[in-house]
Image (cartoon, rainbow, N blue to C red; front, side, top):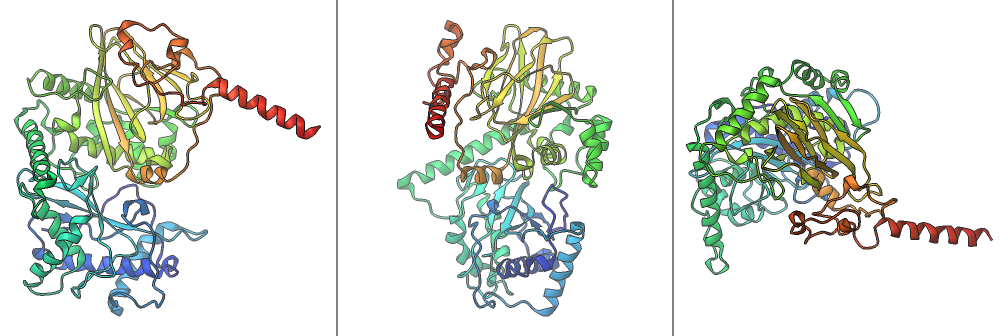
Length: 549
């Protein structure tokens, strides 16, 4: 059954209706979207059984969440479905109430996209609730008259991991809506009443989440084999989650609420001052959160107390219990040989709530470009001790904002983090900071900050690492030009990477242990090492002298 759910995520504030007047196409799309949502909530019994809940009020969203980011304009101002006066009044009231937080000052930029969250359940092996983000742009049309021309389907993004042929990195392949849309609308129309585009989308989302494909696949292209492979992968993941018997079941919730609340008792997890600061931040007061932050490296690396020591022991104990259970273990990445991918052992929903409640608001405060719209994560543990991995070579993370929390164990020595510069900057390989881990404390930084784990001397260190990712930031950054700067000085020895740096052997000895890891070195790119920078500086001096003469 559909249910109203107001999500308290870190979305941008919503403009008033007056600020939307100049964007007729977007206003028209918004009104249609709201009308479709109202109809759904007025008759939830008419929804597919697989729609667990859907939000009632759209929220402003980044344009990057939509397939077509270019707004379509309406020259005549009357295209699309007319909106009755009463419905328009409801839209106006809703927008104005949501815009009260704007305050005075210059008018905000009109939104280019709107989204709502829903929970969808299909059949085996997709029978567990999946959070789906539904985003529309100015080209959305309800299509209740039965015609699909003149409008574009909403963009759908699954925020929970899924192995599915029609889902690529969380995004549902849009072609499926063009293929199935018309037939789905006709089938629903036979039941009576108007059928909106949103209603069709919800029905199709439930329909694709089964072990059988919703359309005939092209076997000659290997599509059937790919479908079966994805289904088997999802079943294997389900098996691991269902067969493991945890010692702390609360770490293994069966679903993630839309706003990350109501499932986890955060007062049992977080230190009191962070719990208080998050509440204040949600209410608009940044001061408590900023006060508890330590700026380890100005504007780049921060640390703060995060987990209580008792929770660190709980999470550490669960990780050790899983490793000793005999269940299949996939290691976190190509660099770490010890640790767990928590998303794959049944803890993804818990980690998603941690991202929603903790990582999202803090990332948005400290790194607003990268952290405003986090929508996926890779969460795992790593372990360092004698006889296993001692440390980790210099690297950058496949994340936009990284959270790294030390869980223990008490008594380890050394095993800190060495931070250097930001990828592609002049000081990329210049030493900046040596950070000492403390149990329960989180260090956060951009994924493109070069860093490495120092060798451990004694004991055992286990850390929880969350690679937070933002699809909006990544799409936006991919369209920008980013010049790789020539290095301004020779690299610091502490910042050299035997895995990535082609000039590693010029500064440090190559041992048999690391030689096999040097085959894919690429850094710095041709013409970007410090000698190139020096040559460029000399040339600039010559040109300057010639012009002055």
